[in-house]
Length: 284
Image 1 (cartoon, rainbow, N blue to C red):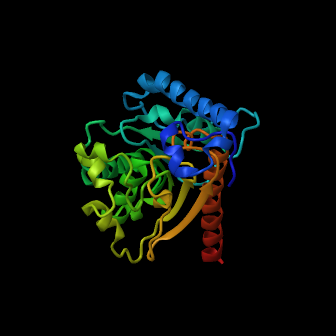
Image 2 (cartoon, rainbow, N blue to C red):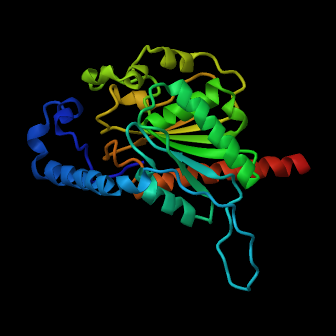
């Protein structure tokens, strides 16, 4: 997948991404950086709107009033999980995009900004998933996790039996193998857990035979928070994982850009199609 027009907001990291080519970027770099800065500014404005958990009402009963409606997506609910020191407001555009695509049910969850342990967060997330399944009547969910949110969801799936509940896990800029960026941030325990070689990363690297969840990982070649960049790729011999490279956008733009949203929709639609085909073969 190729996306153009956005580069990392964090200009100092450009030296790592484009060694020896800074002189040739000039106005293009400034325009692209301004665009990423606009994404951050917009998110800062929206941040207060996502401080609290959303109120989830049961799905209304269908009304047959003779009007034409979009076909409802046959798949399970989609759960969105944000990244470190963030909240569900980061998914405003993605949520709208997914909800308008086939009328699927989308829910956003918050975890506390004071969270200090990925394993604890994954356990709490699992409880939320159980409540969503009970409320919607679905036995499974699809998950989209940005950055740390993807790592929390993966721990739930891989280490806490969450593969029984999660059909597809889509991660956006998630440090699957750990990231070395911002060493001064090691004062925070959850940042230390995201380092290569941490106990959490080692647990995720262990064998996971029979894992039923399918993984789709979006990674950007301009993501300043992934060091090395390929850490956002999921490479595990026991997992059904597909990595999608995104060109031209940074970490903040991954849950915002319409091209990434289209890729997420395609991944979920593909899971729907395979499931419907499997049901057809079973009936036959």
